[in-house]
Image (cartoon, rainbow, N blue to C red; front, top):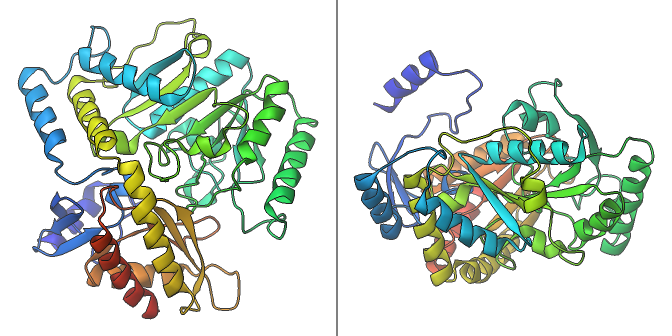
Length: 427
């Protein structure tokens, strides 16, 4: 049945629509941290639909909220008052850390980042954008244009002029051998030099932890140091929290809070986990920035009632059950367990991350050369053992991405680590 579905998929969908595994997987249902395929095989899910199933599969509070709202009305557009949208916007604005915040809901992280770029360029009257090397911000025309990862950038055409900054990857590049303080100083010096050779950009957009890039991140405080330079010149800071938001990193509710010394970002974008699988994205910005557009704008599907009901129920569950704290505790144990395994596997260059956002970088033993074949082998072996993980990375896809639902238990973390250990040892 799956092979027939694969053949039908290839006949009607684009060739560039990537699928995992030599024998692609059809997931039919899930519960908690587990999913099942069409053949009835059970898997521990350590990728959560690309960090989107944030709390749990089939979370009762979310499924109940969706069913009850769908029984009333599913959709009306933003042309009408929408109580669930207002209620979720109030919660997000309060949690954002941005003063006098306004919230605009979209249907995805791509659209959220696209909206943030629109706001920043309109507010600043500049089409120049600073972005980080190894970054990823979505698949729309504007977000592809600022993505600093060749594997996810299919065209050089763009409505924006993009200037790429050092700093998003700590252990590679020209500053990798410096200590954290000197690394930050070197990146700030590079930023100042770059700004000295260009017209003033509209904004810097940055992921606190680069998702598609392989869960890489700078030392804490880098973006605070950047913000001081940007603020002097009126340049905005956009924090792309599509993957790092809602407490996934454990230590903070937002990824930007690891860089909070100079205050919050001007704009925050979010998506993925807040809907627990429902299609929600959004932008938070100071009122003067959000209100800068001088033409009409609406959203047909952003903020629709059924997705907002899901978001509210999911956010309430996350806060009431301290899933941020669980991500910190269980994620810390999982990282240490994987580092112990890595010390015995020559292909593992580094285990990095924080909370339940963990990257395992694979290289050819004794070198820094990426090993995408090894990553593919581990992906297949992990699946055979009953575990689903993701892939990512910069110059070549050789980083295993581990990001389970944030309700992961200690026993499940150990189960997944044991399967991944066997898969890594099989290289």
